[in-house]
Amino acid sequence: MRTKEACLQELKTKGIRLTRSRKALISFLVAAHAPRAIPEIQTSFQKEGIVFHKTTLYRELEFLINEGIVKEVIVSGEKRYYELVGEHHHHTVCLSCGDIRDIVFRENLLPIEQALSQEDGFQVLEHSLEFFGLCRMCKI
Amino acid sequence: MRTKEACLQELKTKGIRLTRSRKALISFLVAAHAPRAIPEIQTSFQKEGIVFHKTTLYRELEFLINEGIVKEVIVSGEKRYYELVGEHHHHTVCLSCGDIRDIVFRENLLPIEQALSQEDGFQVLEHSLEFFGLCRMCKI
DNA sequence: TGACAAATGCAACTAAGTTGCGTTAAGATG
DNA sequence: CATCTTAACGCAACTTAGTTGCATTTGTCA
Image (cartoon, rainbow over all chains, first blue to last red; front, top):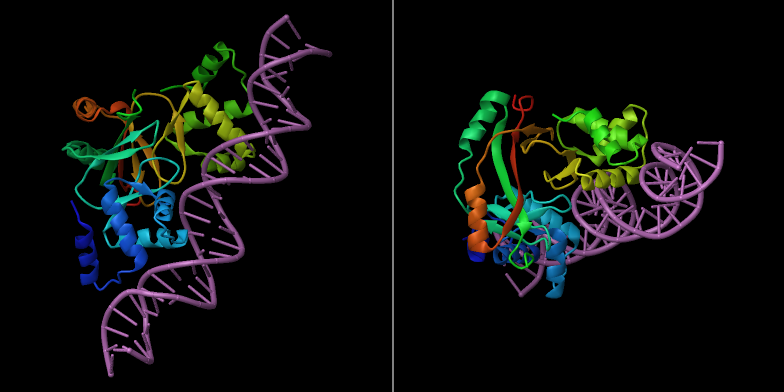
């Protein structure tokens, strides 16, 4: 599990400025432990009295993706979700409340990826696996 | 593989009207063999001289989803993709040209889904597995 | 062919995301 | 601590996906 301090130190070492929005975003994503979309991040900040222009958030996330700190997660069709880069994992998505959670397990998709390369000429760079259903709360 | 005629017959049997847009959409999706987004469908129709208002397309796809003919596919973060309901399968998504293709194989995610239910109380209703990378054309 | 509901088109809207540009501030240097 | 440079920021104005209410049209069946 990546800490906020480790992320900030990593950026500082690279000679990258530690700005208000940069620190706030990393802090937020470290605490989240799950993918978050920009509109969610914005309202969450507002509740704490922190205000950033949406342009800033979009640009900052793009920056952190290029630095390898954050990755875009492909989850649903309406918004883009972001999370800290870390151990390879997948997600559960509740179809009722929209809650997204990380799940970690060892899957073996290598044979499939090799078959795709040999049979279709498709070079796999990454994969995403999501489970859709009802979370503990919504199931009742 | 579902044919256009079979789909139309199925609807007719249910007493559903075979309208201009309904027939055009089914015909398009049968030919596509892969997920398509509404903006793509719209421009594709325009090239053939067929014009439908976007509202009609959104409503028609929603209708066909309720009838079990079409399903929404969760692929990328910007648009919603739709395809004909058929054999359970997954997708390859080219990160360069955006091309999406169906791939069919037998995976066994049941143990994972059972573990999710027992350990986290998450009831899986469906899953989605996508491979991102470079297609035969873009790889070069 | 006429009736009626289903389907359609339109206008007007919301919400996510993007771009150009002038201003601000992080942090390095003296 | 003051100054300088440039990365980062905020704003306005924009594009595009998707939605809603309502009046009009059209498929189908009697």
